[in-house]
Length: 384
Image (cartoon, rainbow, N blue to C red; front, side, top):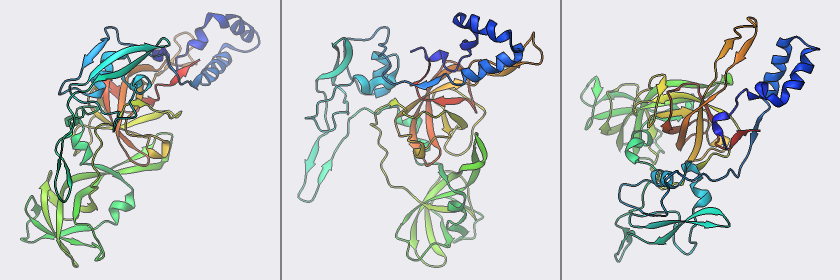
């Protein structure tokens, strides 16, 4: 698959269509033909699975996993496109969690009916368990993560995407126990509008950030960013209730809102795969930290927000290709005619956190600067 040719305007330049072009020009002005050409070009986008597996240039026949490896890096040793890993990984159904890979595992590249396959030929380290009369304790999970967790950790427990009313109606801080203007770790604060029937005791503290709209429908608000300030434990119910701040990442002011913290454990062992969506998404913004929005340009290892969410079938582990949107320029000869330049492949991104209409993704690699507004498409989106 030549993904770098995605959405290109080669239809107009294809020599096989010279005769059609000449015929149409005899009946229509050239500008009318150009419009027709661009219209046909917009119909070129199709969805094609089953892309031929492309091995890396210097792929190993045998690789031993070492501590510090990530699944993305290992996949890149064997494949040109790491997101094709699920298509060549052979699992042993007799092994618990056969998709997990551990340091010391030996992975061998073989071929079945001419198609590459990777299988585990020997096992390395595995988790150990300690049995006690009351419970089974998992001492250590040695499985390698999909990507380096340090790169995305601030965004897993930090900002979140919410509905406007979700934050607007949330309980809020009205003051501190010692009349401080700014609260910090260890301070006790008073909270209004916390329901007496509330059963949660751990809360995140946020303030309203920017809103994100649908690029294809500016009237649709996809979500609001709740900016993470810290968290605290409820120590006394009432009206107002009392909360002790256990962590503060920023100055906490009166008016800050409380949301129940999600205690879900992040699955660091998901498998990267090509996103299945047929839609074309956009990069909405970038995050340079867990606290604030970033600049217009992003590069490898930066975190971005895209207008895809779980309502669009997007899942953690999905990989999307990024394309720089082609500019619209004036034809240097036909001055009144506009031409859209081809979209250019710029890199790919990996989804690691999803909301209903928005997802967080980390840019895994980039061959040029990526900008807000650039396109996000499935690697299976190709041109006929």
